[in-house]
Length: 242
Length: 286
Image 1 (cartoon, chains in turn orange, red):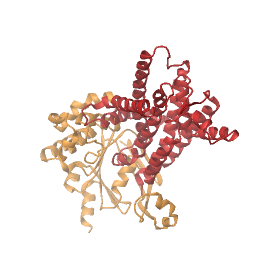
Image 2: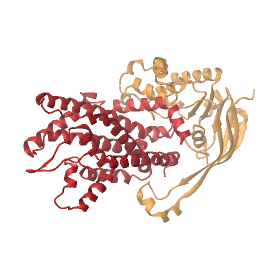
Image 3: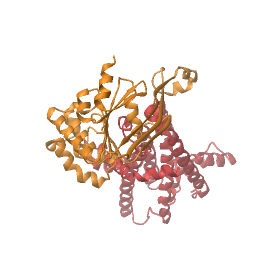
Image 4: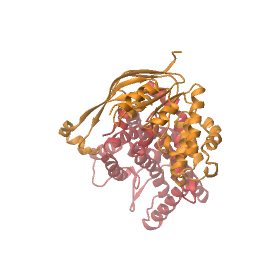
């Protein structure tokens, strides 16, 4: 059973918080301002493992470090100390069209986003029709995405992420944008993804969604794991604390 | 650095896709589309040719051909650096979510401009052929044309190395792109583009050894040396006129080109290391 696709060991992350505004040469030249940099401990020693096929939900208050943890797993941040070991490919679900260029068509954006998420160009081309079908935007695929509604963008983004054959899917609170019907389709797809051996890691404040999809729940509090276990047990405690 | 390069190679498909995207975006909403890449140098060349021929009355044979030989490489230098300065900041929403080697962003900016440079060189050679066909007695081409690929490689190293510095620094200090704008404007005049490098060496205000030194120091600027080299290797030797006074022709200085090649290679290696040392901080930009 123990076949970890993701193992995290004593992970720390510290950010420098600047109070002197945006980055410019001025901030560098006024070096004494550096004293106003605040060290922000976002993650303070986290260890856990996730096995193949698990669907893990991260819960916790705002600022507990959930998104930072996801970013560290996606290799966007470098850990301050500790290690993140991933075996396999990660596909993060991008926020509302973050990877889309407004002037390019749906098809062109699918190609580019597919490659960013680790497909080759040939593979991405081959999967375009599948992605378009799932997102239900066949009619608009040759129109620039700036003409898309936010629902269409969300659907397209989700559809790309689940069709790149990643081993780990990272979802950061973005499922609630489509309509009811598409939401159902998303959950079905996630279920199917999980059954075929895919691992999902997601952050949500929607407890119903957590109960519906996750089979394990990790509760983060102030950069530490407060509780890790079965969804019902963790949520009971989490929702019980003010 | 070897590890970084191997990682970059693993993501080569992304680099191709990103260059492809840059090229598509540029002329996306325009009627002529990609044709602008040819139209742009064509219009520039025609206007400059007419101005030099009819207004400035420069007596140097096919003066405009010599101008373009330096102007087109300089445009590549300028456009690539200006583009790459914004490459990381404009991709922040994506790099905050997805991992890929960050150097792909400035590299894509350089390569898409490189493709435009190649297209404009193509237009330029058509222009040279047209001139040749009208005056078949004097061919504009020389055998040293075979060295042009070497010049292109040196320039690519130079541009890429600088692109690494510029893109990394501009992400943290956005003043860099304004300094870059001013710097490129000044470099345009400090490079032999609208005049000949012979005019530097045989300047009326400089005499003897001083003129030699100024000529050497002037060409320690890599882009100035490249402009001189493109001109001297691509086209037949010419004795430029200043007014009615004709200057002697100076042969290609291979030693100075060697210095430029070395400087460019050094900039590339240091630039890449510098970029790699900063690239994980881009997303944590204060």
